[in-house]
Image: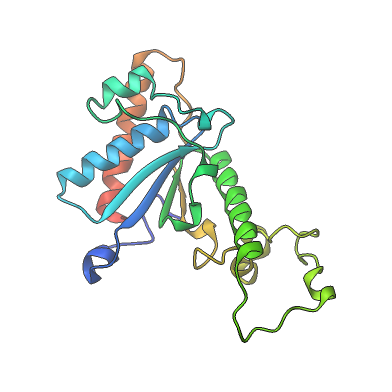
Length: 216
């Protein structure tokens, strides 16, 4: 997805009174970049009097689920926005429920796609059959995915449009179409001096403004 493309003009939710669009910002630990992007988007939405978008954040790294606070520099660069923030993992979010997933790097995009497949597989195993639906034959139930082998869902990025529906019963299509990566990627500033965070925050604010203006 283009950095600020896919949805142009007046948001669908605003046009038709539908439920607000949901946006998720993703980085590794959910204490710096994604937390700052979440804050920047909320500030820009408030500045433009937008109430039709809900913004959350998460991390794909191993420690993201430890409920860590936002980094000190992130908190001071976005005063009043991140004091109560606690990190969470993408595994604790229903990724297929988001309209836009904003990743800092292509590694995060890969992590998100993998988690979307986990969600789709879990949904496929728990979805009840309709009263008119005949049970599958044993050999059909055991058939592996033709694109990957085994019983994991196909990757929509690797298997094309036909496989996208196979992997996303809840999201109305493959996750890949709803993911954007920060232009040029954005490296982790953790452990760096404040000046590095300031430069990072400046780029994040610029992307947030572009997204609100042209994509959300």
